[in-house]
Length: 133
Image (cartoon, rainbow, N blue to C red):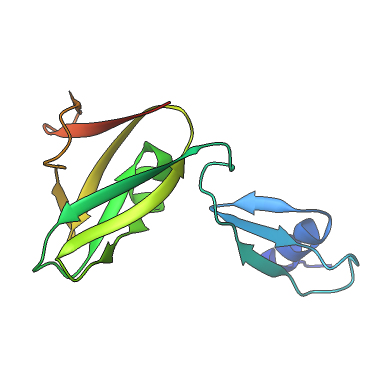
């Protein structure tokens, strides 16, 4: 019997709940069924954090993203929303600790001009630091 990768994934997922990259996969309770449902989870950090607001002024930008250790950097960037004042904003729930982050503005790495806590990174620039208590 030859089993495809898709059939293997469906079989594995029907045996329980699996979290991967912010999605929870639910089996339908019967190994013979081949459908899997997914729902987006809201919290990126398990729901035990503090809300933190990030803002970046870029009136002419097409997109602004927040990336950091809490998003696995570019793996799961957070899109900011542009306000009428040209300032892009987002609020993120973050666990206590020190978090490294940067902005991607139209695909270009940018520093947060409002952040005074910084640390050199291995790429010759600096990461911004956000301390969450």
